[in-house]
Image (cartoon, rainbow, N blue to C red):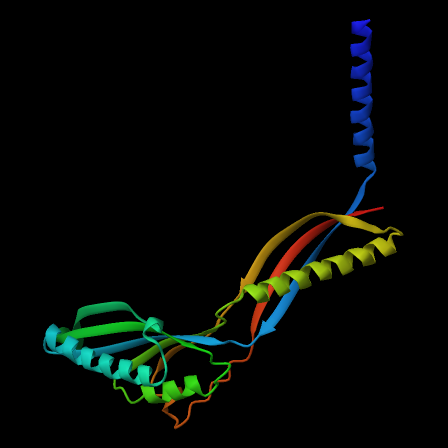
Length: 237
């Protein structure tokens, strides 16, 4: 009797498993992708600034760079840039050579200090960054290596781009289901392929030589793009 009961239970279990397999085989799904793009105005700029000087000795070169740095820091402070938004990224000393009569000749020692400066709320006060750049030109031998325009807090923008990407995937799935005479039931899986954000940048500008030699610098920043890519598999019936 016990053996017969076990056989019945085993048979029912097999039938239950087979029934589940049949149901899964009969399920239909649609896999679609969606892209969400959100445009936003930059609210911050990061500048890489180098100050350099060549003198007879390393000490003399460094002393001159220190004077230039002090003048620059005072100017940035007066412009409302906080100390926490200014940091030294490198300090280097090296011999400076020139080729004279096809021979390499030592002409002095070069000292160079590079700093990363962040200017915030440029969207609220659009005149702030151009004014700072114009004032920097008063410091001799300053090289602006790069300006990056960015967005300080992008979490909300990424959230909006994901929502838009999913909605586009859903709209696409509904269209395909309608064409096939089916209906969307629910999403089975959602995968985020990637998120893109590319800061705008201006590179290799020697202050006082080209762009920034004008009395008033104009820097239209345009908009930045935040993009999300998702793939969604929907169950249909």
